Image 1 (tube, helix red, strand yellow):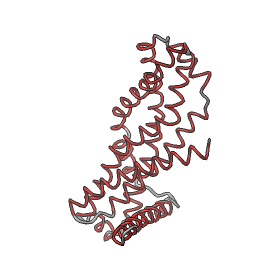
Image 2 (tube, rainbow, N blue to C red):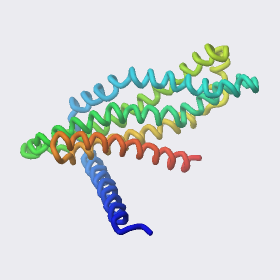
Image 3 (spheres, rainbow, N blue to C red):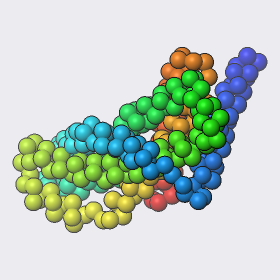
Image 4 (cartoon, one colour):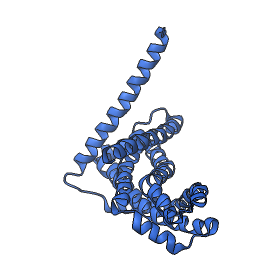
Amino acid sequence: MIGERTLTLLGARAMAVTREVGGIAIMTGQVLRALLPPRLDGRELVRNLHRMGNRSLPIVALTAFFAGGLMVVQSAPFVKRLGATSLAGWAAGYAVLREIGPILIGLMFSGRVGANNTAELGTMTVTEQLDGLRALAIDPIRYLIVPRVLAMLIMLTALTIIGDLVALVGAAVVAFLVLDIDWRTMYFSFADNLTPHDFFHGVWKSVAFGAAIALTSCYFGVTVKGGAVGVGRAVNAAVVAAAVSIMLLDFFITYATA
């Protein structure tokens, strides 16, 4: 039998999750309302695009290169056993474009950009800078949140596209070094067996992942309580919520488009 204390804890956890989901939904509505009409601070948007995108490019490219190579290494025993060198590129490309690329880059983006965004907004919240903006009749949603959400959407999509290309190059390089497969064989394996649908499937996922990371990181940043300790808890909660959201969205998008 489940004890009363266990039921109480489960109920409290369920209420907490419901409260956080409701808060994120409300913030989503506020962001959409602020976009109609779209009046943005151009300098803030450009600053966030550079900070969130350009500075994330090296780590994303490095991760994507080895992710593509890893797909080839995993399939190497079967390729050697069956002699199916013409399918090595398809296997690596299919996994990278549809699943590994968007998920891995999304998680990297969440850990680097999402966590930093939560910490920055959380610090502004506990030091009452957001209250100062409201006192000056400046809407924090329109001035701070909307540029960050748009920047994360744009940059994660762009980074996913770049990461996919780098991952395919990594797959070709590792295939040549490990399996002695010529790069032209890998190229034709990519071109003949992969379709634009495989590519855009991953791109749509990256758009959804970018929205999830942006909204969760902003929400936990502006709802911080408890000073510096609260900022740390908010960063942890934002990263966990973004990771869970990425996995759930990946499942439902894949299921809906299968």
